[in-house]
Length: 158
Image (cartoon, rainbow, N blue to C red; front, side, top):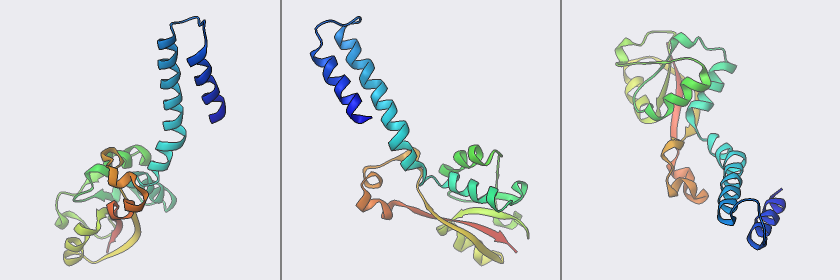
């Protein structure tokens, strides 16, 4: 597939006659090729690090009651993908004291320390994620990616 696109691109560069101006054809072909690359290779590889996708899949698989699932603390970047892939507008827990037994909370590892001090909890799911809407060169570099990942938990309040 890549060979076909490369061959067409070279042909566009050396072609004498085209139906549209050469610069327009090159721009159009480049835009289409870049779009195909991003949508088939780049973005799918990134989405496996998007916490909301992974958490929503876990919630669906374990059939957790969505009305009892909350987000708490520094999970802001993950909420939109959680809403979309979870097909539900998960509520934000404003204070730990408002959580009750039977609730589930998507929370960062740093915020979990505070929750564990105040409530009896059990970690039922752990994931390392990254807010892919805030890409950085460190995250895009595979050797440095692990350091950029944030640990998230889904916690059951008991």
